[in-house]
Length: 357
Ligand code: ATP
Image (cartoon, rainbow, N blue to C red; front, side, top):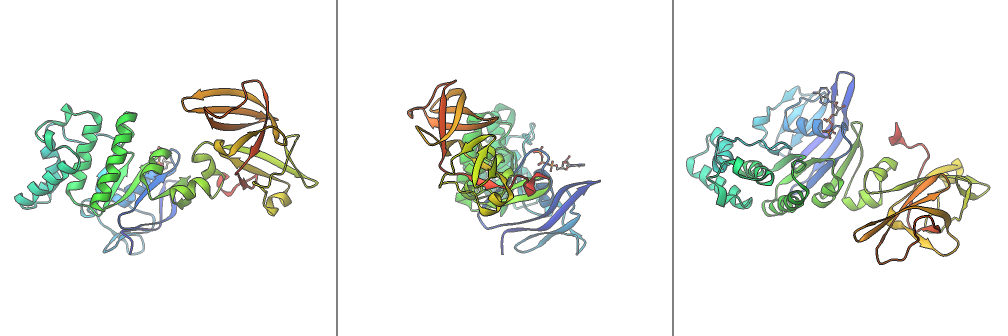
């Protein structure tokens, strides 16, 4: 069985359904990121798993025990769930040394002194804090403080770590460094991670699978590649990575962007149900639109910006805008010039998507 199983869990606050019938299984050693816009229910889900919130429906289980079950009317308090937890705020005790911060949960659990010493030293070594074990957390940077919180969670040797935006208070440099550090420690120690973030690059870099939520409802669960290249709906496509969503009409077997006749390109054929409906949305990543000399969709370069290695274009096509990105070595038009576009890859969605409601 999986290390952690969420079986149709639901949470309501008054008439707001924060999480609706959410299913998820986290496998041994797997990292699953929960990703979605603010208010979509990520933190509530994590809090239900941690035991800080009871559930209104469903069950939460680990391989060997039930944690919360509505039907069995059972709820195990957080301190008995044995999860490691790291939150956004630097939750460290300023009056204790780094060593004592890490040892504290083990002392609460009344472990033998030698075991406390061994686990604390191991956790400090895994997080590179052994040299500052006698310092106070206030002597450390934000990244250092968060490392103390991580070491404290590791010391209880959890099978599952619950991380809620643990890197969002760090500056970008530390954030990237800690991202790889967490992944590295996870590989070495083999625990599973359930990770809440609204940062898609963090989710892509850290996780084996990503769960995308909107309005308390799961939109898709898949590997980063599946989520990026085969998004289940328009919302997921638009939420992950940059995208252009072009409204397109079909008329007499021809395809139009506003009033512009669009060449039907073999690389992006519309499925029959979209053609049959007479309209649809073509979603295109900026790297999947190419400039061509002839036979493309006509547009005007509204803005061309150099972003280091990448050149970012906004191309006006009728009333709509297509985002194109090329490396700075690739030739491309200048601001104000006419150009033609060909889409090498795109995803078609119905004009009204189930995720829109
Ligand atoms: P963020 O990224 O901003 O933290 P989130 O995806 O984690 O957002 P939640 O914090 O889980 O979202 O909130 C989900 C919904 O539940 C929101 O509508 C929120 O206002 C509501 N909510 C969360 N906690 C409570 C509470 N204690 N009482 C009432 N409503 C709540």
